[in-house]
Length: 604
Image (spheres, one colour):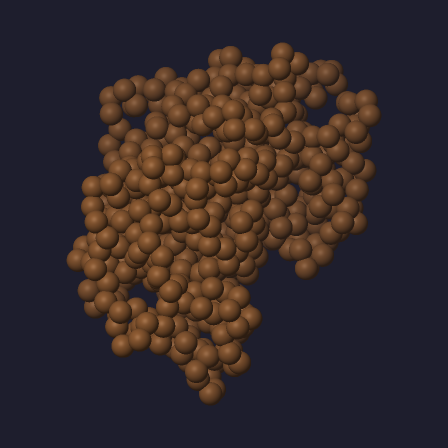
């Protein structure tokens, strides 16, 4: 049978070109491996740039009491102790080294008066820990990694969507996909494959994620037989834009709150002081200077409640809205302009510290944040769950398949601390590239039949070849509405069961998805092919959320609003059965070593 596709061969193939994928590619290439990188969009258009506040690393540049042990304990506490403790330890130990490495490659960080890398406060971190570049840290990371990576002999394949992984026995040996512009099909043979495709935000109606985030990596790994873990834990960032409608969900960095921004309701009340955990006691300062220090987080154990973990802040905003005290467009007010009471030339200060946020609100909402409050509300932002990986090597439960970044799970547990995402990309991106290259050096290319690949070509063209059928955009819209309403910030058993039934109905409808025209420049075809991934991650999320009959971290059950002792003992694993159905089981949390338990207890 004639081949209907073009073939490329690499020792290591990276799927995804964000911070994790680029760091993995750089590391694999440095070992002498041939490396190919496939990205769904253009190089540089990665969600890494949305991580604006900074990268968490215990360098102690602002407060010398900080160290990796404190960072480890903060990460475990933020993750409600469901984290893979080995990953949390590796991350805390290596994050500082990865930041300095990035600086050596050309990254320009904000500086202290002494010339050290400046670090700022962020939610859930005991000390100022986020190395940053104003509020454009993720952009600087991508710029630096790209500038460094393009000189390493790496091949980049832009605007290519991977739809299938192929196996030879129990090992992944190739990826199949197509060029989005012309619709030409591609086969990428590889000795090792690294998935770094990001998250699942487009399964929800309101999200900070762009169109690429359709759970591709999660579904690719699941279909290949890999375990997914902790899929019930989705982070709803408390501050996304809520107005105008065209920009609803776009992220408003936590850096606004880290620089002193406060949250108020329609009555002007700073509502975050209610139901505050003991660590976050209210200020008793008698003078403006001390009060300002408290609000900006300079007082240990007296950080502002706006810097509580993201799940807590998001639920508090929703509570105000439901009580009728929300902003005009269904959110809350975030005010950084008030610091003019304490800082001379506050307008210049805000523009210097938060340049992207200033321009974002001026251009998109016609709001001057140096003078007026912003309207914000929760937006689907990040998934803590993902592909189950080995802590040291980042290999999944399938041979030859590695994962890093947001699509890999374990580090963050039930809830991610702000800033840990960027250092996660560097620490585990490096490790994924290193161990994928090592694996590739010990094996040969697998065997793949031409007929098998041609069958995938035929299957991929079904939406174009049909003469009638369902509109794929409508199916996606219906799924997003269902997930937003029934599996969002607040969940219950009845609604999750309803969501699963509907997802099954959408899956049936997706088999008749129709994208008229040819495959060149056909976005309807792309959407039709994305539906499978969205359905897989949505079903996995709902089944996992049903399995966890408690509330913890990014998972809140209105019918089980409290944490349980049992809930701290297991992670939820999803895998594909031989008959194609989905099974869910509880697996014991990886036990902490005596040393790790002692550290957690010491810094509790």
